[in-house]
Every structure is written in structure tokens, then in C-alpha cells.
Image (tube, rainbow, N blue to C red; front, side, top):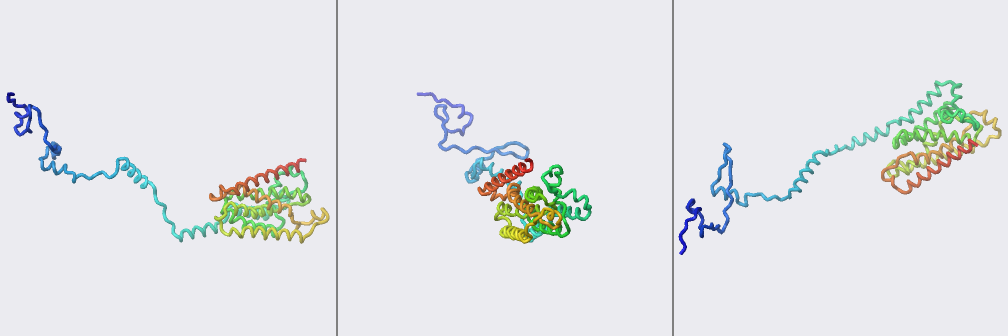
Length: 328
């Protein structure tokens, strides 16, 4: 018979759980954990059993619906949304006002060139203007500035007014759709090509005027329509205007008829340097294909790349041919 041994846990706590041979027997259901509270003085006190059951009841807990990393992502997205500002909505009146302002805004380069042409014609004496004209002959490289400056001099007021009106008409919209420096490159290229063409096809003619530059700007509308097709207004009117003006120039040259003697050609002041017009108009198309900027929707199209490659080939061949002709 085993002696009756009193366990230390039973001796210290009379309400302890039943024991069996000094081994503590756990109850069937585990008691809830006891909660700790902090009073106003900073001391921690334990709650009673009823409060513990109320605090630890499952209904008092709100389950976490999202995972921790999802919560972090949602917080970062909220921060990003706070950083991004919504653009201010533009009313129809403001859009219409911007269109009217852009439409009536004068082209800087074209307007400046017209002012320069008028000033030279009014204030520069005739003796000085002779140093700016294009002189006949092949040895023009002794005075190379004439290849560009002849476009600043005009024969009379009618010649100046006609070039100024046409330049403003064809350059206004072109400079608005492209930048001013691209229009300037086409202008200078047309002047140079017109001088070289006049020296090549009409070597006895003294050439003055910016007609070659104006025709280069006129034909530059054709590449502009191709590069910005679908994004410019009145695209059909621009090729039509090129055809009409080109046909009128051809009819005018045919009606005047050929001049028999070179002396008569030099003595007449109203002779038209049709070679300068033709070369200026011809150089405007490939030069614009290379310089002008295409729209984003048309930039990667195959026909745009082919046109630009073909234009670069044509310009290279023209420069080499002119160099070989004048240096032989």
C-alpha cells in the first residue's frame, strides 16, 4: 500500500486541479489567457474571469481581410495617387480661343524676311544692290555671297509685292505646322538651288528676287501633307494650289516665247529666270522630306522612310553634279 503523499502544488493551493501521484492533471478544456490592463498610474492589473472571456471572445476580433504585403501595396498606391495631380479640364471656349490665337499668330521667320526685303529695297542704294545680285558666268565662287544675297534684291516694287504676298500665303501655315528653323532651311536651300540652276540653264541672266525660295516653300507643302497626313486641315487644297501655280508659271513662260539674242536677254529688265523657279520648286520637295518633322502616327511608316531615303539620294546626286559642272 502506497503512502499518501501530499504534493507541493496541492499544499500551496487548496483549489488546485486534481493530482495523481504528484503529477498535475490538466483540465479537459484550456482556460482562456488572462488579459492585462494598465491603469492610470501605469500599473498593470489582471482582469477578472468575466472580463477575460469578454475580451478574448472571437466575436470581438476583426479578421484581417488583406494580407500584410497587400496592405503595404495599397498604402503605396494611395501615396502615388496623392502625388499625381489631375490635369485641369479645358472648356470648349478656351480650346476655340487657342485655335484662333494660333491661327492669327504671324510667322516669325517669314514676316522677318519680308521686312528685310522691304528695307533693302527702300533704303539700300542701287549701287550697293548690284553687289548682291547674281552675276552671269561660271566663276561665281570668286564672289560666293551672291549665291544667297541675290534673294534679298528685287527688280521693282511689283516684283517685291508679289513675292511677299505669296511667301506670306504659303509660309504662314507651313511655319505654324513646322518650326521656324525648318522653314528657314527650305528658304535658303531654294535660294541656293535657284542660283545654281540659273547659272546652269540661263548663264546670261542676272537673277534677283526671292522667287526660288517662295517656290521651294510652295512645293514643301507636298511633303508636309505626307508627313502629317490626317493631322492637318485642308490637305487636299495644298496639292491643288501647287498644281495651279505651277501650270500658271508654265503657261506664262510659254506665252513669252524664247529670246533670240543673249544681248537682248541682258538688256531687258523684265525677263523671268524660269530656271531659278524650276530648280527652287524642285529642291523644296526632297529638302522638306529630310528636314520636316513627321507626325507620331506616320513616323514609322514604310513609305515615309522610303521617301526620305530617296530624297537624300536625290540631293546627294544634285550636289555632286553641280560640283562637277562648276569645277570642270
